[in-house]
Image 1: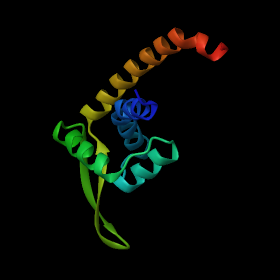
Image 2 (image 1 turned 135 degrees about the vertical axis):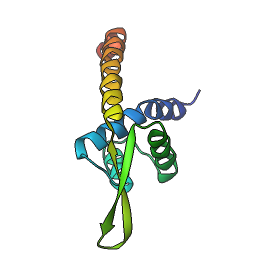
Image 3 (image 1 turned 180 degrees about the vertical axis):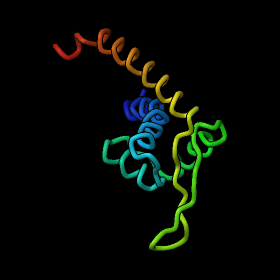
Image 4 (image 1 turned 120 degrees about the horizontal axis):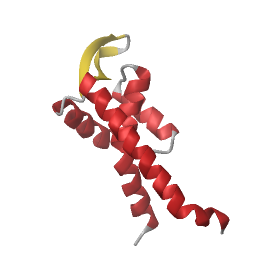
Amino acid sequence: MKLENTKAQMRRGILEMCILAIIHQEGEAYPSDIISILKSQNLIVVEGTLYPLLSRLKKTELLEYSWKESKSGPPRKYYSLTEKGQEFLRELYTNWEGLAKAVTATTKSLGQA
């Protein structure tokens, strides 16, 4: 088993929550800005990963978008959370906190090695 594959799977598993959290924090977000934030936190994602995920989140009514004029080209699509998306994010985060606590408790001896 390759470590890089496992690390990539772990990142993918939390990517949806991170994307929703970024949009929540920003109020609305342009996809390239989301990518920049994820890259700055070493949660590397490429456009080919992000756009299908945004589309799926829109189809499940967790996100909505609006078009805004751009100073440097055509209008841009900005995403924001719906009420359903905000509730979903709260539930995801609550589950994440429980999972992180359980993982920390289970692996605490590794930090002492």
